[in-house]
Image 1 (cartoon, one colour):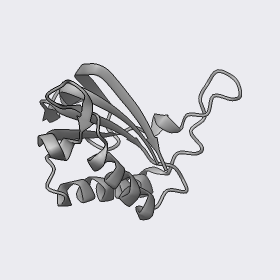
Image 2 (tube, rainbow, N blue to C red; image 1 turned 90 degrees about the horizontal axis):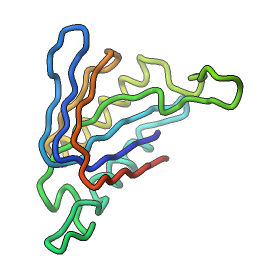
Image 3 (cartoon, one colour; image 1 turned 45 degrees about the horizontal axis):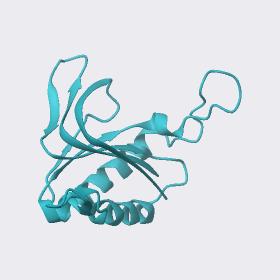
Image 4 (cartoon, one colour; image 1 turned 120 degrees about the horizontal axis):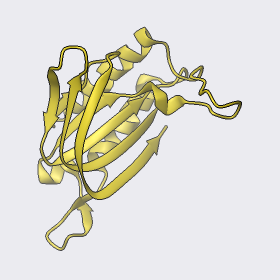
Length: 147
């Protein structure tokens, strides 16, 4: 399981086909979530804990010292199978390490559910849809988490 975590002032995800905004947050974290073939609920649990406690939000001294829980910030979680791109051979990425959609959608839902159980405001994209992301990065701060 791979996460690209970006601190944002705001972020919004829109379905391209319908033009509908499906997820929108103000200050918080934009999380791109990639799920691989070997990923399990245990991996999701670990990364949920890591994400909730990751101290990358600014304190009063403008130091990265607080978590999203400490500052009551929101999350926008978007599925992103392309995080499992393998570009070792040729110029066209291979995605054979990415989990198949039905299993990935289950783990995506599990991950989001665990975040919501922690009483964090969570918005999401639409799994499997072509989407447009608009975000105002803060810092910029970008952190990669893997399990």
